[in-house]
Amino acid sequence: MTAVTEEAIKLRCKVSAGSPADAWTLECEVRKQLLDYLATKQPQHLPTERITLAPRPPLNAPPIHAGADVY
Image (cartoon, rainbow, N blue to C red; front, side, top):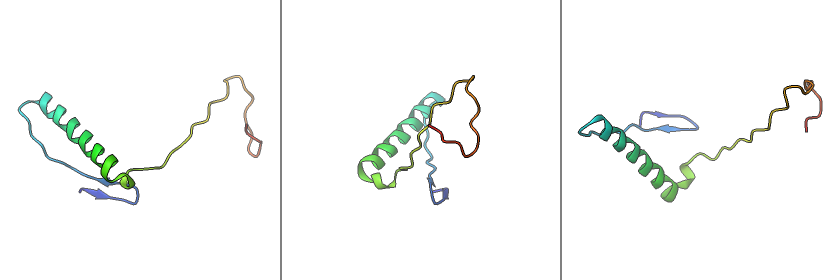
């Protein structure tokens, strides 16, 4: 564990492989298996914050002023 905040825990794993390509593949596989483990065994530790993006108004739409109702 390299860092802990209210919203995240940062982990660092050391792995080795015979070539850079194998090291990349191994890194991806370790990350995938760690996330799979968390999703199945410890789902309460995965982030749950969600955002919704509203569509942008057309470029020729009049500007929205502060306090105006937005639909």
